Length: 173
Image (cartoon, rainbow, N blue to C red; front, side, top):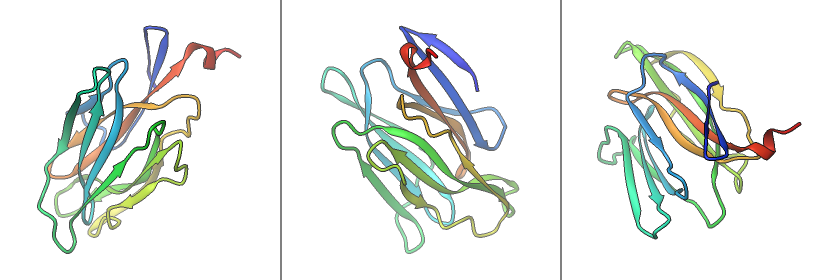
């Protein structure tokens, strides 16, 4: 876990879960922004994310991570539309070694929010053809939202980690 102090806040980093190779994606909110929609592309494993982010001026931006594929019988695109006041709190799931590709992959993923503590998902069918499946979960942070996602992707997501914002007052003991 690493910490960075920015404008009266502490950003804590958890992960990456899965591959420990250097990250090649990072989606991080700027001050006043919030996630409004998360799309997850998944089949046997988790392939890609798409994040819709609301800006303070009322416009939106979209961030895409990974390589998408058209929907099929075994490949789906699931969307989470966040309600007003709802925010991401943690990610959990399983990662393992994708034997045919000889790389790590996110086999299943759940996205948790303050309104859905049990989490949306799981996305991914559990990594058919994967070895050494390992459970992961970022900490259940109740005093701050997930303000970013990072990790590595190639053909599918190889790793995922989160940035969580904590207010200084939440850190006083």
